[in-house]
Amino acid sequence: MPSSPIDVLARHLEHVTVTDPPTDLPVLAELLDTVPDPRSRRGRRYRLGPLLALSLLAVLGGATSLAKIARFIAGYDPGLRARAGLPGTVQPVASTLGRLFARLDGGANTLVRSWLMLSR
Image (tube, rainbow, N blue to C red; front, top):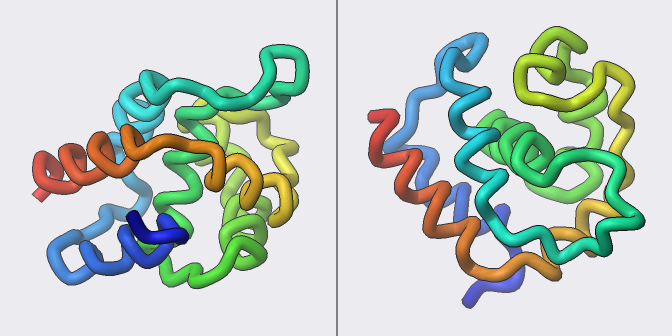
């Protein structure tokens, strides 16, 4: 299994067209909420699904590092973040995203692949 989900997702870019703004973002966030959350219940600030959905949009938008993903998410329109299910004030940190992504199991990859195939 690759060490970075960015590489896995980037391989699918040639097959994906992203609408602007994505109309099925809430559906994707709900789908990704079914991924088991590796974080302690006590330390969670944001739901996992919306955080993963916005991270996916960042990668599809060209983000190639955790820092760029964090900047993309912080730079999204607050309305888009709210539609995804995150507060408009979300300011994720690259190191936090990295720890989260490292702890995820392969279920997220399978779900994202399924969503990419359905959204063609």
